[in-house]
Image (cartoon, rainbow, N blue to C red):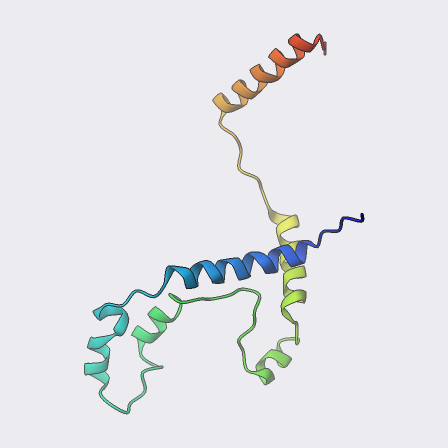
Length: 126
């Protein structure tokens, strides 16, 4: 049984899982998210997309990192990378820059004590 693992696919799956989690959370509906004040201010049949409130709230839904929502000409001008290629780039970036969080000194001491206890119990010497 050959076991294979694709880090880029993992990164893509992580993004999809995040989008699903966001969808399951639902959309908060209140006066602010409905932008009632903006609707009164701008008025009917006007441009809401250019209003700062729209810009402020547009990121509350989803903002995927790997799925490109640009129109095709802009996407082509930017290099025409598909989601998998961007995921590969993200994997490279993560592998080059990730710094794992460091355990607190007291945790390291407890882990060391457990290891030393196990070594003593098994008769293992350094």
